[in-house]
Image 1 (cartoon, rainbow, N blue to C red):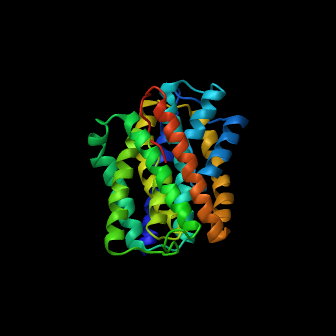
Image 2: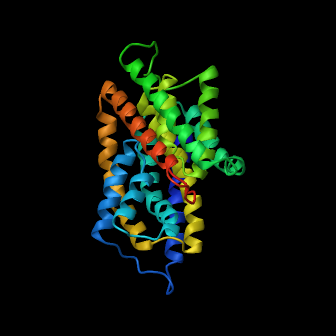
Image 3: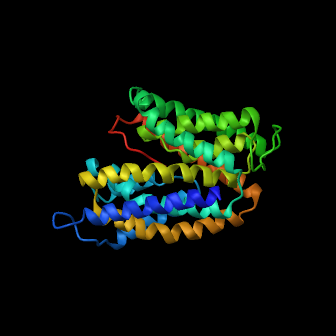
Length: 291
């Protein structure tokens, strides 16, 4: 019942986003059209996003490579274009992956609260320092996870629920991850590695991390749509190309053997850490919310 309510709320969020998008595409907006490059980018980045890599960093890199948008409209384009595929991810994984409902709702709620309540705190912190710190922390966490995969450390890794201190830690961490999203720090990699280290089956992390982002991104997208600070042509391509790619990637994650999935988690987190460290070493840019 609770899962059905979550899915219903996600469907409403998607409908509200589409309605707002169509309502703001009048004479002064662009016609609802797109191109093959935008469709291709949407398909590729959302395929890998469904595997836990994230979509914002690779999308930004491709946008800059092909000079598809001015910098000030990139955050809006990413939020609007990737919201529908992210909602699709959440709907699919909440339906096909078994995970403790109490943990699912608590972590999603904590991430949303972190984005709302923690934004004022983290926004005053140095973005570069946070990115460097998070990148280093992810590398350490990936090292510990690899040690566990090799049998060098004790630990489970196949649980579908957490209890006691582990439950509290997971919820508290998602509050922090939600707050960090306001600085452009993606939630997927830290959520994936932290839940795995706490002993969960990595698959169980997918509905949690995707549900959190699926509830956060539409809110930001509505603001960008109202202000017309995005490129409709690009965003439409990301959305249309992304949804089928999500369906394909979801089947891969669902059927992937657990041992292989654990190694994929380590690879994803190392990649995310590298991108975060690289961004931390660059001159600071305007913050953008990421998944």
